[in-house]
Length: 355
DNA sequence: AATACGGGGCC
DNA sequence: GGCCCAGTATT
Image 1: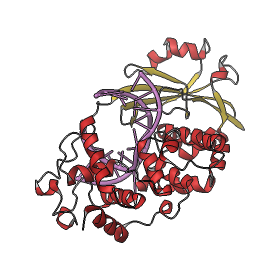
Image 2 (image 1 turned 180 degrees about the horizontal axis):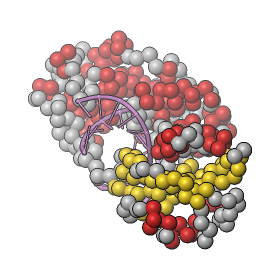
Image 3 (image 1 turned 135 degrees about the horizontal axis):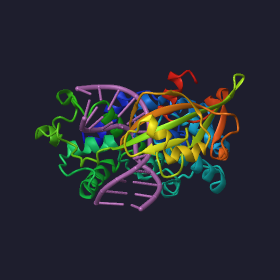
Image 4 (image 1 turned 45 degrees about the vertical axis):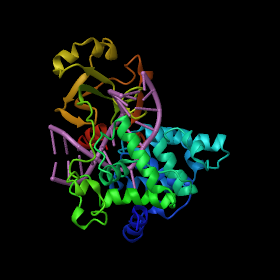
């Protein structure tokens, strides 16, 4: 029995029952593929359920506000996925007349859909013979063929693609692709794969050569940068109508489209005193002297490419005392739940009883 | 070809 | 602390 037959046979006996495997609706398959980019099944599962409930068709998604989509995406990370998902839904409605494109090259044109996702949708929903290459496939292939080139180099990548192309030929593409990914996720795991009981341990070159623990080889990425965020938690209003000042995250930085607070970023950690006398502080409060109510301890927030050290300075101001108030979204505390916010902000708000 | 983009889980 | 995860867009 060749590789693909054995693989598909294994898949038919061991696959997990997952909701997006029970449908051929390209919209729902698309949704699942985007949610699970760089995301484990356990982490994204409930998001998939909520998205399909709230936006059962591409029209529902296209008609939503971006804030709604981001709110539902909140906590999943890589928020450009949500923004692009929303944009692409509008494209499907407007350009493709609400009908999801049914071939690889048209699918690939949609925002947020790259080679992986296009191949996944084309193969699973439309039975087109495109192999997917995701983290699981890379691991399975690099081990079975004992590919020692870095898989994130051009040469290594080419070898992986050529190899998987050979394996998929002549087999049902959707099933093969899902089987590869499932096998990588459940059996040929990054750490401690159970090679002794693997159905491929006789043909796997990495196993035969004792290379399983070394493969796949990856060129490692840059160490994260450190950033120091001094957040201004500006409160105003009276007890019956407390207001809080939010700020929408700009283009070209993390958390684009989500909301946080007016921010003074510094090169290093800064004490409150020098912050209060800084130009940035004066620019925000321009001459007025807000009442500093509380200064938080340091929050450490780790992202893949940056380590954020955040401090929250809570101040009280007179209502309408800020001249440049149109820079901010001034929200009633009870409306806070509607705004999509980063985890870091959510943690601060929760700890301090705002949520 | 390299880099940025989140957050969580595991060792 | 480092690695990995159903990758993509941008430079």
